[in-house]
Image: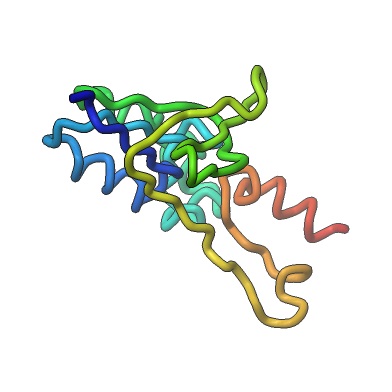
Length: 143
C-alpha cells in the first residue's frame, strides 16, 4: 500500500500545527503556501513602531519543518480543488495549475479582516511585514 498524502494549505499557525501534529504518522505531508516564511503576526505592531525588523518576526517555513521526515513545502498558491480526482492545482511564478494529488486535504482559512462599513478603506490593517513597515504607514497617511 502506498504512503497516504496529506495536503495542508497555508503555513500559518494552524497549518504548521497540523504539519507538526502529523509528523509521527506514516503520511507524506505537503504544505503549500504563497509565501516562503511564517509570519508571527502578533508582533507586527512592533515592526510598525520600528522596535523590530521584519526579519525578526518571519521564519522560513522550510526551516521550521526541516527535521520532519516525509514533509515537503511547496511555494505556490492553490488555484483549485478537484474533489473527484482528489487533487489540488498549484500555481507559482514558474508553472500554472500543476495537479498535486492527495488522500487527505486540510484547507487553510483567510481571516475575514475588517467587516465594518468603511474600515477596509480607512483602517491601517497590519497583515504583513510590508504593510507594517513605518515608511508604508507614512505613505498611507499622506495619500
